[in-house]
Image (cartoon, rainbow, N blue to C red; front, side):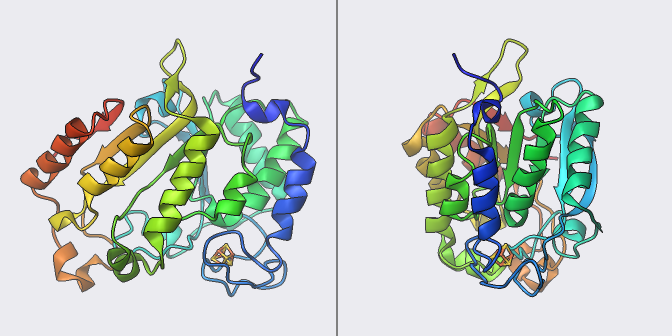
Length: 302
Ligand code: SF4
C-alpha cells in the first residue's frame, strides 16, 4: 500500500540529508556547479551561504487551485536564485535577496507552523540552491509529526543528481519551462545549456511522480505541473515547450501564464518592454489544444 506523503515511507532520509550536504562542499547543488564551500563562503552565483534565507512564509491562495485548495498552500519563499532572469517578476526576493537568514531548526518551525495553520502542503518557492537545508529541515519535522506533501516550486534549472536525491521526498513538482532556445536563456537569464538541463530535469521529475493526479477533494496529491510564462514576441517558444511536454505525457499538468509584465531589468531590452499581445497568447492556447494537453490552467488576458 502506498504511503502519502511518500517521504513518510522512506528509510534512508538521514543518508539523503548527508549526501545532499556533501554537495555543498564544493557546491554542486545546482547546474552552475560553482565549486565554492557553502559552509564558509557565499561567493557562488546564488550568493548564499549555508544558512537558509527566507523572505516569507504564509498561507498562499494564489497558486493553481489544486495546490492552494480552500485553506491555502503553506508557501515558504526562499531568498536568492541561481538564475538571474532580467524580467523576474519576483525580483526583490530572488535577485535583491530580501529575507532573513535562519537556522535549520527555525526552518522546521516554519513548516510546522504552517501545518498547524491548516496548509494543504508546504510549497518551497525557488528551493534549488537550498535543497540540502530543506531536506534537513524536513527530516527534523518528520520527527515532530509533520506529514504534509512537499511542493518543489522551481525555475526548472535543476541539477540532475540533486533531483535524483529528492526521489521519494518531493510529491509535487511545480517547475518552469522558460525557454526552448539556449540563446534566449543565455541572453535573458544568464544560463548555459538551459534547454538540455531543463528537459532532463523535467524528465526526471516525471519519472519520479508521474502526471497530475487529484484526490477526491480536487487537491493535487502527487504529480507534475509545468508552468510556462509566455513572453512577448514568443521569445519563450510556447509551442515548442508544449510539444516537448506532450511528448513526455499528456497527463502532465500545464499552467500557461499570460501575466508577463516588464519588471526588474526588462527595460534594458526593447523586446521585453511590453506585455504580451492577445494574439500571442491565443497562439499558445492553440498549441495547448493541438498537443492534447488538457490538464491544467490558463489565465485571462487583461
Ligand atoms: S547553489 Fe549557488 S553556489 Fe551552489 S552551484 Fe548553485 S549557484 Fe553555485
